[in-house]
Image (tube, rainbow, N blue to C red; front, top):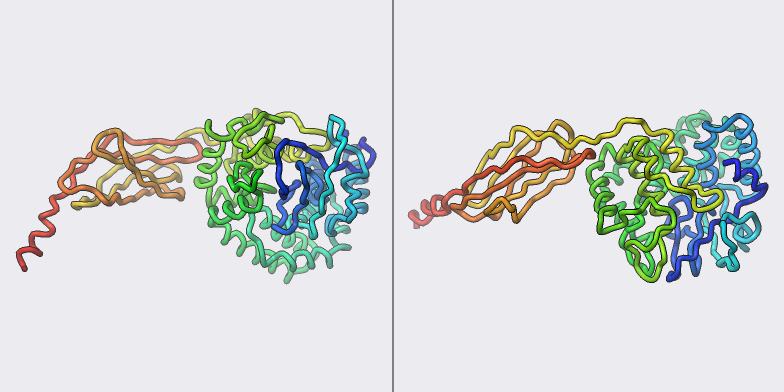
Length: 434
């Protein structure tokens, strides 16, 4: 933080030349709508969004010395006057060419980037954080008309978790300023957006399409669904989609994916095209999800906290704050499975029930042997589990076991068996009536 204010001027966006790229859209440090990204060719730029700077320095503010707090306030005041967070970045892009470089290496070429046409809705959460932590409520009071206008433009198209934070920020600002009706509207929009966000798969698909990998591949290997995640929204995902989100993270970061996601400037992993290494946004999105959705403890997050990419690495600062604010405790215990029962068996189906000591997913593995060649799964975290297996052979002995997964891991029961009924017992009365 001290190096940022000591730079004595506007920090240029961080420029990263990765090798093969196409005409792509990159997120900067907050989630823009589909028509609101900086377009660059070639390479990537990071940390150009004024709202991202305001948010990051604001959440770090409480942990600074009084002297450094004063300097950060002055720095933010100058930056917010130079590039107001509620206004589009100017064209020509002096914000990309006139300032202090962040890179530790010489940059001989900087791409010509079109600025986003409108600030993202998440800027309103950044401004709430600024006012909340610095105490400068006068700024949001003086800019209320712009805050209200941005909210009105964006409130009807919230399709990302980052944008939900903007509705939350708007409601909190309005409540603090005594605008009761506006606060109620912001809260209603936030609830509506969170209701839509219950469908994690929809937001995941949207994010993957909005932030494709090189050659426009929508793999989601950068975990863009978690771009711009804030603590409150992370807890909401944890309460409503923890198992689904955790399964997605585990699948992304296992041995076949980006399992070294946290390492700065790591060599090629799960990339499309001739990229030499993944960018800083991968470690940022996965780290915030582990902190805010999975609830990883401070010791775990510290192990994932690698070095910054350059001067004023806003992603690193956000990860550092998440680590500081994490608790020491975390769930490391898989669920305990009890009371496994076969409730009903027909000639083609079997219904199995069991209990777990904590909310967890439901899965039944079954087959003719203990190799369990088939399985059925059900998302959602519950403690009372009930599943029906269908498509079975009549008059056949089946082996089965039940499994459940929570944030602490996966547990499976011992082997059980059931035998399906004779099919003719069902059809014989029908035949006799013919």
